[in-house]
Amino acid sequence: MEVLRLQNLQKSFGSVRALKNASFALNEGEVVALLGDNGAGKSTLIKAISGVFPVDRGDIYVRGEKVSIRSTRDAMDLGIETIHQDTSLAPDLSIARNLFLGREPVKLKWLGVFAPLDLAKLRGAASALLKRVGISKKLDADALVSTLSGGERQSIAISRAMQFAAKVIILDEPTNNLGVEETHGVLRFVKEVRDAGHSVLLITHNIHHVFQVADRIIVMRRGEIVAEQTVADTDLLTVESIITGADMSALLKETRAK
Amino acid sequence: MTIAAEDEMPVGKRRSSLLRSPQFSSLVILIVLLAVFAIADANFLSPLNISNMMAFLPELGIIALGMTLLLTAGEFDLSVGAVFGLAPVVVMLLVQNGEASIGVALLAGLLLCVAIGAINGLIVTKIGISSFLVTLSMLLVVRGAALYITQGFPLKSWDQPGFFVTLLAGSFNIGSFRFYTSLWWFIGLSLLAIYVLRYAKLGNWISAIGSNRNAAVARGVPADAVKVWLFILTSVLAGLAGMISAFRISAASPVAGTGYELEVIAMVVVGGTALTGGRGTILGTIVGALMLRAIRNGIVLIGVPGLAYNIFVGVIILAMLILHALLQKNAARG
Image (cartoon, rainbow over all chains, first blue to last red; front, top):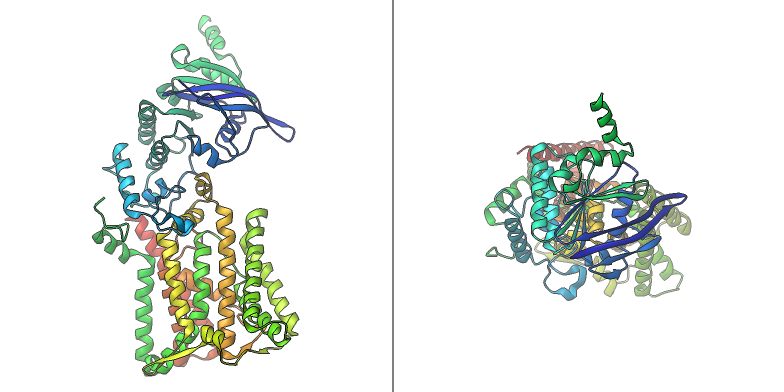
């Protein structure tokens, strides 16, 4: 089933057309990798979907319904959660407090921002969540995020997105700056997220990771989507050549022929 | 879900993390300092001297509470000392020119503080200039305004007994100790600040904003609005402290509070609040306020020459900060 559809999205910054005419759809329970060189328009597209800024033209549909996303809050309310490498968690807060940041369970709700946090509920829900995503043995809900490794932080951020039953989870370079083992942990986690029925839009520079977890690949170049393929129908070299714009497979054939 | 609701941590862990916390090391040093002063001079713990310290403590302490919250959110305010001077001056001018009753004048003074805080906050958040530069400029504007409207002369403050004098600068005796009502203000506001920072939803937002503003904004936390309100709060508390001080000594001087901004920031960071935001502790600030007050009082008593005493204050603050940094490093390693 289709969860998210983008139709003819356009966005310019001054005279720079960052997004020319982007359309694609994301289905339930699939991992789609968004590839492209620096400046291809990936992050513009992501920011448009996650509500950082509005698009100039074009429509966004969530579960077939046309929506307008004007703020990050709008996107979250529609079930679109974006996770950036460095901007997703507050290091000085505990895991539990991070998991519920902006959606804190409180008592005496009428006190507004002065309402006391429901600490028992916060802890309980955080522990339950950590257990559900299989990292409860290693992590304590009260531990400060600053004491966690990069991979653990990614896992926490992704679990937070899952917890709010997000339909679409956007991962912006989730494996940057991670070690080999941590990278595998995060990729495994991405698969689990998909198996739990969430859709994942994965932005990355690393094509190898794409072939490990993605179902489909979308390639952007100069603000446009230039290719869309299922992983089973393509290979690393083809994708690489589409990204750079050079036909490397042809080049390879030539060399082989010689 | 069996954990008691009073705190986030089980008791055992709470105890060990308390021992390693910055406010605890500050507390130990405070006790050591008090002991040293008490041994060096028997008068240090006399009722008169303690009463004296407790009279001064709330005035800077109240500002330090606001500053702690602001620093935790990642900003700071250098204009508090100037606001401390300006607010009571405006109040007294309004009263002496017969333009307002004392109650209305006090309210007008506080509203002026709201405006100053709002301007600080809006420039910092909406235009994106660092709070260091914005509040430094505001310091000059506000101090200049206080000097100009008084022509540099101190004003005689309100000294007729009445509701507001009792409310802000009344005094009472407990045994041979003499306390001012300002101590109640400090205690009450401290409890409120502890509640907000540790237990309220707002406190979670404040820490998150200071720790990683982008993360907070991405979760829908209204970071700019929170910061503006904290600037307003800090300004209002500085103005309130200035009024309390002016009523206590029955004079409103346009140069009152000069240098208080640095003293207040020193109290806050000595208590363990991070200058970089994200980690704030009201208990630490209270310890820090007590410590700076005790140092200022104690080194005079033990005979350090008046002109030399800033050397001591500076050295002790530096030693405290080094200690915090070392503890922090240790904690990160362990």
